[in-house]
Every structure is written in C-alpha cells, then in structure tokens.
Length: 391
Ligand SMILES: Nc1nc2c(c(=O)[nH]1)N[C@H]1C(S)=C(S)[C@@H](COP(=O)(O)OP(=O)(O)OC[C@H]3O[C@@H](n4cnc5c(N)ncnc54)[C@H](O)[C@@H]3O)O[C@H]1N2
Ligand code: MOO
Image 1: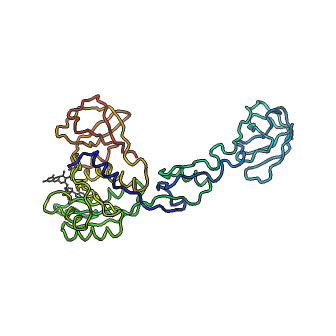
Image 2: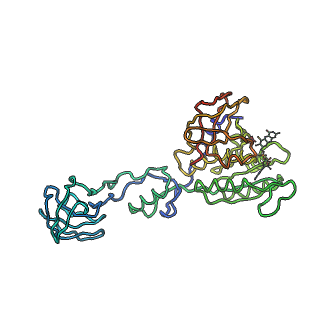
Image 3: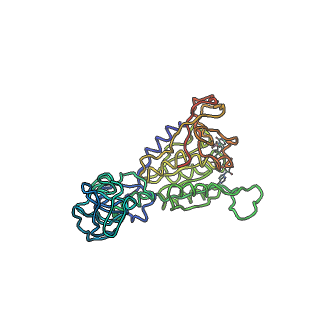
C-alpha cells in the first residue's frame, strides 16, 4: 500500500501527452495548446475610435468645423486639418492627424459647426495600434486550456486553426452481475448501475467525449476479453468494480493476462483504497473500486489529473484551498481521508454519510476535505485543506 502523494507521483510519471494535431478553431474548445502562439497581427491593427463622437486634434480643441465622417469598416479615411473635426463612430479608423475623440454627449452641433462643451484628455477614446497585443507578441502559452474567451481572442487574431494535444479516447468498463440498467423495475437483489453514467459525465465535464461504455459480467473470461478489445482502441481504460479481493473480482488478473504493467495497487486512503493503476505502452488503465463514492474520489484525485496531463495541462490536480473546520474530527487509522463536504465562504463542514457506497452526500458536495494520516484529531476552528470540486 502506498501513500496518496506517492500514487500521485507515479501518475505524473506515467502521463505522457497525446499526439499533437492541428484543429480548426471550432474544434479547439476544451483542448490544451501544444505550442506558444504569437500574434500574427496587432490588436487593434489600426488606430480605432472607442466611442461615437468627433475626431479632433487636441491642441486645436476649440470650436471646430465638421468636414467629413468616418464609419467602422470605411477603407477611405477623410483627412483632418487644423480647425476641423471629423464625425466618427465606435470602431472606425481615426484620421491621421487626429489624436483624440470627443464623445458626442460633450458637444453641441449646429449645422457644420461643433461646439465643445468639455475638453477631453489628450488621446482620449483612441485605441492605439497594438494596445491589446503587438504583432509577434505572445498571445497564449503552450498548455493553455482553450475556452470560449480564448476562441474569441484567437478568432480576433485571425487564427483559423491551432496546434493542440489530442483528447484521449476512453473506454469505460463496468463490472458486476448485480448491475441493472435504468428503465425497468429493479430485479431482486440488483442495483441500478450508476458508476458508468457518473464517470461518463465526469469525463464530459473535462472535455472528453470519445467514450465507449461496456458492461462486463463477473467472469474472468469476459473481463479478459473486454480488456483486450478495448485496449485495441482506447488511450485510457477506466474499469469500475472487481478490483478487490473477492472470488468474483477478476480485474487484476485480466489486466495481468493482457500484459498491462502495474504501477501501483492500493493507496492508503479512505475511500478508494483498492485503486489499481498501470500502463501498456502509451495506454493507461485504472481499476477503480466499485463503491460509487470510492470510484468518484479516485476519479477526482488520480484519473482527472492523469487525463489533464495527457491532454497537455500544466496544472492537472484539483485546486487545494484552505477553510476553517466547523466540527471536531478523528482519524485514528493512519490513512488519508477524503471527506465529502460543503464549503461556504471559508467555513467547511463534512457531511454525515461518508460511506463509500453513499452518493447522497456527494451529490451536494462542493469540496473534498483532505485529512492527512498524521492528523489524528482535528478540532473545530482548525484550518484544513480541501480540494475544490468547482473546477
Ligand atoms: N475482504 C475485503 N473486502 C473488501 C476490501 C478489502 O480490503 N478486503 N475492500 C473493500 C473496499 S475498501 C472497496 S472500495 C471495495 C471495492 O470492491 P470492488 O472494486 O471489487 O468492487 P465491487 O465488489 O465490484 O463493488 C463494490 C460495491 O460497489 C457496487 N458497485 C459496483 N459497480 C457499480 C456500479 N457500476 N454502479 C453502482 N454500484 C456499483 C457493488 O454493487 C458493491 O456494492 O471492496 C471492499 N471489499
Ligand atoms: O476504500 Mo473503499 O473505497 O473505502 O470503500
């Protein structure tokens, strides 16, 4: 049995990034950049008016004659001479000699005469070339996760495609004869299968959509076959259940028979002790404990960072934060505890109902309270560490 920190180190050591591909901007969402991107143009690329008003020469800011107008998108820009003003609109190119735009609310127009009721600061409302970014500047760095703001930014720079790391294809195997699909009354002594859809949604939340779901009955033959088949396709295998020591837990043996190399089995934690991790060439396999809360905790603490690393993330682990504990806690068994908890402001309260079979408390948790093995007794009012589940 290894410590949580050792298990996380082993995960990091075996999380090679996937292939680099060039994707259209539309498909880049949720991917991590595989290279630094430099700006191919300046933003803005011409001097731009930030407001609707009049372009003027600041040193000439007195009553002026309006001699023309310029609109956003105009290719021809009227010339401005001393003593003159040009009617201008937001986004329009600022005439060459103009250095300032006075907003129309601060003027009175009488025919072609413009009366300035307030004098703006010099350079007011003129966006200089490269104000946001100059051509050649670093726009986004390798490892950046592309979100809607990044897509908008890159589109504004004229990018049509970007180099990113591939996202993993994941196979999700659920083992267990007791598992029943939803949609029919529960058969005697069966349970509705829930880890499959839960892990599928957790994968989708981090941007992974190529997910193959397979149900595996509790026989060695079926487990060996399912592992073999999914290893032909997937980059990452997640297997739920069947990883413990019971007579019908065949996952370890099936992985061994398929030549998957074990990096660790069993972590000194609760829940999720019987976690298995291994690789075969550049494919990785997690044997997740079947208890639903154990499965999800192992996902957050190990699988999610592994997948993020493979996708090119530089900050793969869930954020660790601090909060003030609202009750006393005991941890007598020298284990790391991950407790389902609610954080409000900087106060954290673990929920009643921590068993690894229970999702009722997980469903309303926004934090995983982390109690280290040496923290045998933690007191109300102590500052504690938690993992932020709002990611
Ligand atoms: N003698 C021992 N028994 C067990 C130990 C141990 O150290 N010695 N460890 C316990 C711990 S801790 C855990 S966690 C579980 C892990 O067991 P498995 O990974 O083999 O999982 P299963 O036995 O298949 O299932 C456990 C539990 O979870 C339910 N389950 C399984 N899959 C699903 C699913 N897809 N959706 C919903 N629920 C699922 C299953 O019905 C069982 O109740 O082992 C302990 N035993
Ligand atoms: O470690 Mo198990 O995951 O506690 O129930």
